[in-house]
Each structure stands twice: as C-alpha cells, then as structure tokens.
Amino acid sequence: MTEQERLFRRISAFRFSMWELHMFLDTHPNNCDAAKKLEEYRLKTDELTKKYEAEFGPLNETSSQTSRWAWISGPWPWENGTEMDGDL
Image (tube, rainbow, N blue to C red; front, side, top):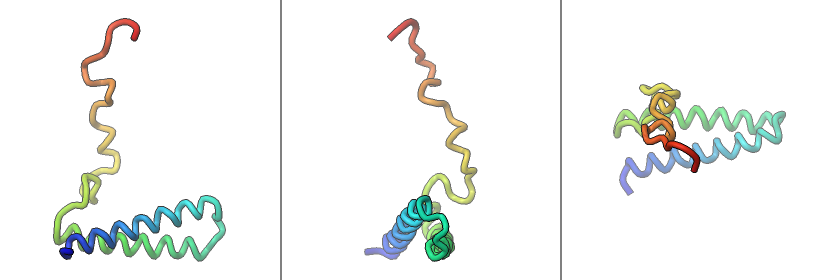
C-alpha cells in the first residue's frame, strides 16, 4: 500500500467515525464524551486532509479552495434545454 493510499484510508476512517458519532449525538445530545470525541476526530481529520492535499492534491471538488455551495451553480437536471411539450 502506498503512502497516499494509507493516508486516504486514515482520513476515510476518521470521517466514518465522525459520521457515526454525529448520528449518535442526534439521539444522545447531552453525551459530553461523544461530543469531545467528535471534535477530536474533526481536528485530526482536518490535519490529515491538509497533509494529504499538500502532498497529493485536493481530495475532491469540495476542497478548501472551493465554495461549499459551488454544486448549486450548475443547471439542474430539468434545466438541460430538453423540456418536453405536453403531458407525459
């Protein structure tokens, strides 16, 4: 396994753990230990993501250089210019 693959797997594992903790906190909002762990994993994920992007480039199109709302600027599927006339 290359260093790039190893680093990507670590980032993916932390992201998965964050998602699980987030769902847990939806049903247990007063659990301070889980909230602390979520913040710890978020900081670690940010650190690893910066390292990955510095060495190998952006992980995806929503990297830190891209607006999180960039996906909404393109045409919607029904705005592709092939609107149908009449009923289906």
